[in-house]
Image (cartoon, rainbow, N blue to C red; front, side, top):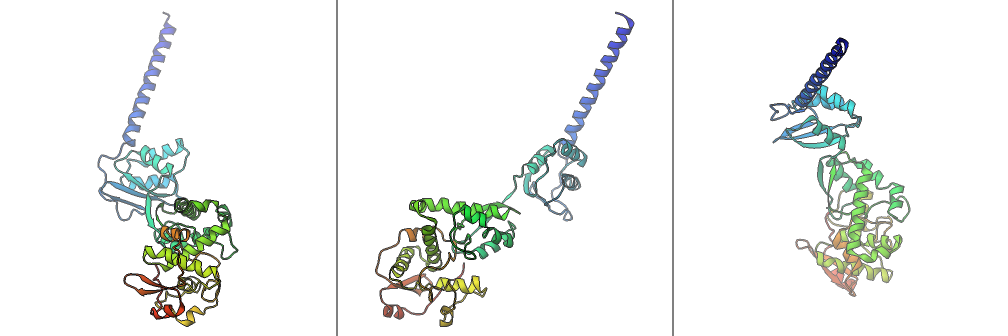
Length: 361
């Protein structure tokens, strides 16, 4: 072997050895800095905003518009990761940005695991319960209090024409909204969730539930279905005991059949609280039932222009399966038990007692 060849081979071997040393050193450093700190904090300093740590569970909020670098700096300062510089390197290698939201992560966790979660957008979900008989405005306040979306955004989404057309909601503005078509249920939503997505989820749930409750609804026109939803929203606000809901639905159908006004206290309450913005009344007086408004079914025959609440299963089933009777009236006679007296004549109805209204949810 010639001397030049031996020199070349020795140089090549040295170069390979040097590369291996650099590679092993790099891998070792990467594994070290990627690994969680040897001692994790038991609690995050109160000065660390948008982050909390309890029982080994890290709750981390990534604000809208916050950069990945900012998140890495906060994690290092809180003692969750060893260094922000590896975090910065990972961010340059993988260009996918971290997603805004609230995340839950069990510690200890590697930087790769933490970053994978924040990039995935798999946020922590929060439970929100929408009660039966609520209105759009009440639902909006519940969602805003839970930090899911702002009340203003929710109400705007519930009136968005593209969403209304997608779900084939009939009617004319301003009465054409998603009122009545958002199912009352317990939902899981992430914080700062798009309001339109909230409306879509609740509307999808409504139509899924309705298909199970009343399969016949699938063959109805939007206008026919809307009449049922309007009536169900009234029954929802009137009944207190589930077994009376079909009887109430039957009373309203009997009134509609003979052209009699529905005379629903719930529609007057809707006018007072939702349209006029006044407190819920304990008792309705003559001046209340004489309010001039299209939703007041004491002075306007037929159905109101739109639903007055979000009906649940009991009310929806009642309007599709009403109890047959010749009753034309009902009146609350036992507020404690929620029982009503049903009658055929006005005289019998008057003798039943004082007029009450169902309390607001």
